[in-house]
Amino acid sequence: MEDGSGTLQRSSSLGKIRDVIRRSSEMLVKKLQGNGPLEPRNTRLAGGPVSSVPACQCWFCHPSAAVLSVCLTLTWLVCGLFQCEEAAYEERWYPAGKWACVTKGEPMYEQSISMSFMKLMRYICKENSVGCYLGMTIPVLNEIHLTKEGTELEREVVTAYYLPGEFQQNPPVPMDPEIHITERAPLWVITRVFYGMTTEETILREISLFWELLGSTDTVLRETYIVAAYENPSIPQRRNEIWFICRAE
Image (tube, helix red, strand yellow):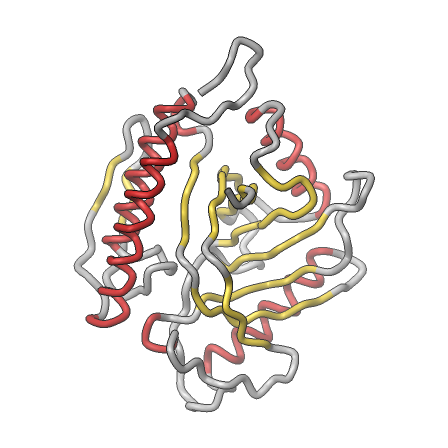
């Protein structure tokens, strides 16, 4: 919720809500990884759109019916606590998992993510130790860092693809030595949707706009952010999200 100055403040009950959501999500993820995908469902947020979930995806892919329902429940609760209008931003929790990651440091952000995405697509399609199509999951995450001045992006970008549930225990080995399988810790993020091409200019603008919405707060990192991509980088008006990473409590 906000204080009189418009600054984001955490509700005293938010910790309890988080604990409930976290436990529920962990149980659902274990169920998904053990028993396969669940049936699709539509979930409507108060004041928000309907989210349609395909049945053929892993928990992070769309991110699967049951876990998405938990994330949307958290979204509704947190948006209610923060009194944000029409879900201007959401707070989500994602469990730990294994990701295939590529790090690039090209002169332009778009070059880095395009090169990394093509490497990951070859790994997904066949260039892996099992020699088969692994299945696409979304969003693909691009982890970025700001310079000390906060006016530019560092050149190094980490692009990450979440491995489907059936490959979480034993990830296929990439043929490309630049692809590394990484176990990523659970993640609390505050997210906001934006559309279009992702350039350094548009990302910096979205970060600035997001800070204006949140106000002054020390609950999120200021140097590291994530750009979540839901569509191929070649699509001009693609859906993206900017993720602010919450500090560990």
